[in-house]
Amino acid sequence: MPEREVWLIEDAGGRPLAVLVLDDDWVDQLYVDPAFTGRGLGSHLVEFAKSRRPVGLQLWTFATNTRAQGFYLRHGFGAAEATDGSGNEEKAPDIRFVWKAPP
Image (cartoon, rainbow, N blue to C red; front, side, top):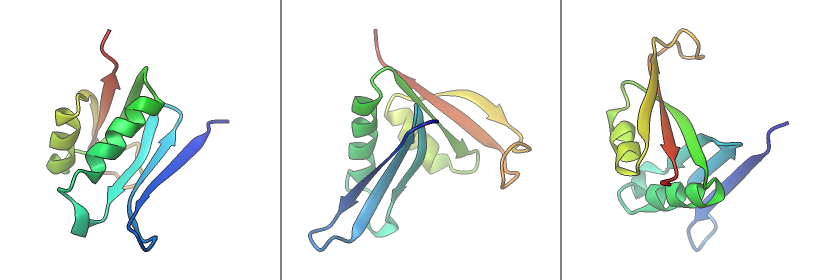
């Protein structure tokens, strides 16, 4: 059974600002409150995920989410596979991104 890890970034009052869910080597979720994007929270969580999974990570993002694609490319992920979406709940084309630790 895969183990899921849930990591939160909260403000001083305990309000969640960002969440990372790791499921084995998958970034199952990475979400930053839209009011707090562009402040490095997502970057911090991606780097944290890399430290938790130093061999490598993978994730899916929708083909229409070009902002997320740029974010992951900037963080060293590469596109490994694209689908027409027939295999996901939303039936929307998606892309699998992979990060491998440098040798």
